[in-house]
Image (cartoon, rainbow, N blue to C red; front, side, top):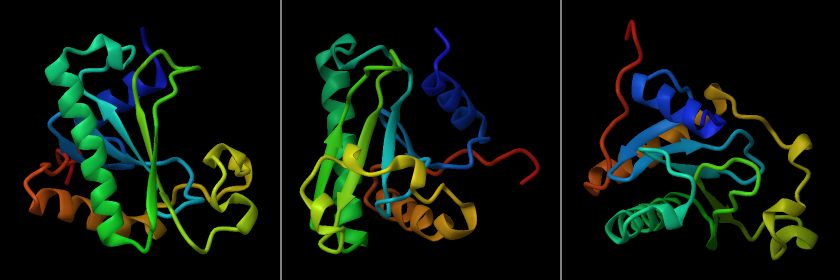
Length: 157
């Protein structure tokens, strides 16, 4: 199976995915395609599996722990007041976890609603110039806490 998750993990492994932040024991931390909530990340498992139930108990524990460690880092680095974690798997048959920081300054109608109520098409797209700082902060925090290692260097770097 070759899903977008498989493709992105392969790019992370080669150091060619621009949204890659760092590598954790269970997979890759990447910034979301859109940034309607500053710091929105995903955890892509490596190796890719169809769903959480495909993993052994040890793999599940590592993946879920890594997911919450990303949330802890975002709580530490931003003014988020809580985290939302979601694994849906409805379209792509490849596990991936969405990690959404939630903020007090979100529009009132959306502040306590599921993030899927946002207009994703109108959201600010990932921009390496705007997002490099938060990506580096997340990587630095997870690496300093010994939860992650840097991404491989891109070719010609």
